[in-house]
Length: 612
Image (tube, rainbow, N blue to C red):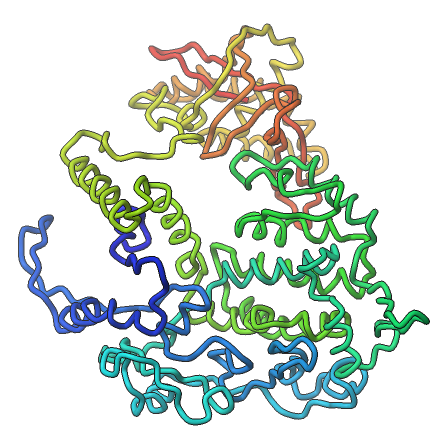
């Protein structure tokens, strides 16, 4: 319920113009008090059953970005000990010239017999890896470590504990440990897939396209490269005038290649509602992309990156494609445990392949945290219930409600109070007429249907445009057969026809097209008269020759255009894909919509219509 928009404000707070940092526990104290009381149970009235019951509530986990992870968990997310999974077992180090923490060399996550562990010149200079991955620390073990620390509400300030940043990153005992069941939770705080994916993508995009000021392959990165790795071909080369020349990296595009990518992105058209207009982000003259939001990076990384950077060498594009596929699989709505185990094993290998190409400065905490995402998915399930997208969108809506910038918090509260009142009152109106809904691609499920109708006439739909068209004999026959074979009530007859005809799978399509409609008309004419039989007989008589033609059609939440209607538009909605029945995609169909027709079947007491 807390993930739905009407109730999302219950899980948010408005801290003011500055971040509360560790003091967020002060804001959370009333929530913790309520959760402790609800864990025992509160007598609640069930209006549906008209009886009282003892309602108990438990906190599953927190959803937050990485800086907020440190505020809520008590483990600082800065420095070389920033990873809350590896903790003090990390092998991150501070770069000599870059001055930032680097998580270069992930070989300790590989199997003990992996060949990468014995390579001395492909990763850190003259080093092999013998250690195993950090152990998975349970919540009870974490509680044992922090129970001696102070809570922020008790002391009112941050306490810098001994050996902070060297052997631990604890800054406080989180107020969530006051909950009696938290030490039994498998997953207390979520790593936010949205921000990790966005930061990972930004590093790849800016480094590959060599964007000045944002690339991870700058002069300091090349100096660090000579310290930690053996790659003489990429080291800075001194010039006679005392300056240095930076050789072109194998993973970066040339200026012309970067401009070609921007031009391709400028001309790219996506389906309506799939993503924002990515063309606005492409700067063809300068050969760089800018202004990409989190969802733009989400789409680019998972769908476009292998195509956009296909000109890179195989040792670069292959691991980048593996990163793309990892996040695509991770963000799937359905996750399989066996697939998650493979992802958990393969991601360290992918990072090691990247480490053979990119400099140590490329690998910050965001690249490293991707190693732990598959494990958290095993514990928490699909990421759609654990990432920040719905909350970021909600906060964007709240900020747009601000009219008085001198009183930002009050403006947000007033606007939300009005929306909450409207939502509450909508329960007393028929069909919730006061509740705003997004109906851009939605249809009326009850439109055009009656008490009894065949399945092909019951699809909810909506159309735009209207003109008449007389179908030719070949078009009419093709449309009639297509309607018959896609009608659920006709499927038993189709199976009987194929069994009776005894034709091969390769010849079945042409044989159905030539003979099935006449055979079906004969079969329904001799069956016992019933209401369902009368509908089948009307279907067998075929549609009217005069049909209606549309240029736009909405069905199942999707919008479709004819190809001619998409010309000159920024989105492309005329492509279709139909999965075939045979393995390997041999008979999968890819095509373009040229026409959208509405067929009319005049029989019984109703006019039945179907669109093709």
